[in-house]
Amino acid sequence: MNEEAVSELILNAFEARTKSYCPYSGYAVGAALLTESEKIYRGCNVENSSYGATICAERCAALKAVSEGDKVFKAIAIVGAPKDASEVKDYAYPCGVCRQFLSEFGGSEMTVIVAKSIDDRKIYSLGELLPEAFSSESMK
Ligand SMILES: [Zn+2]
Image (cartoon, rainbow, N blue to C red; front, side, top):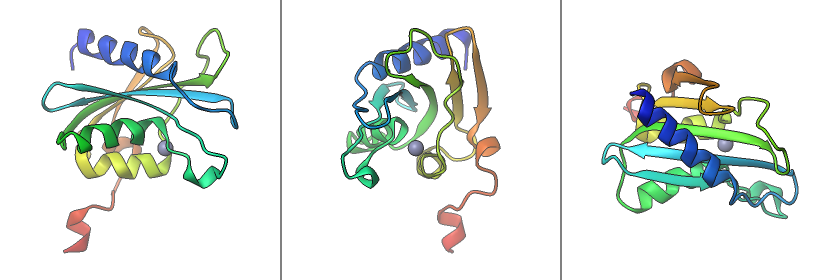
C-alpha cells in the first residue's frame, strides 16, 4: 500500500471512531476496511448491556462489506482510545475473534494498520498477527 492509501484509511478509522457506542467500557474504537473493489467500509464498536452481544469495530466494518457483496479484504486500519481522550496514546490491536473473522476474507496477506495518528502507525500482515490460522483449508 502506498502512503496516501494508508493515510486515507487511518483518517477513515478516526472518523469511524466518533460513531462508537461504548457506554459500558468507555473505550471507543474505529476501523476502516479497504476491499479489493477499492471501497472503504467504516465500523465502530457497538456495545450492548448484554456484554457478549457487543460487536467490535473491525467486525462491524467487515459485516458491512460482506453484506454489500465485498468479500475480498485488502487492508484495515484500527484506532482505539478512551471515548473522551484528546489523543490516541496506544495502538489498538484487533482481538482474537476479529483476527479470525478478517482471516476468512483477507487471508494471511491482508494488511493490518494500527494507528495513534497518521504518522504514528504500525503495519502488519494478518499472517503476522494470526499465524497458522484456521481456515477453509483446515476443514478439508
Ligand atoms: Zn474484536
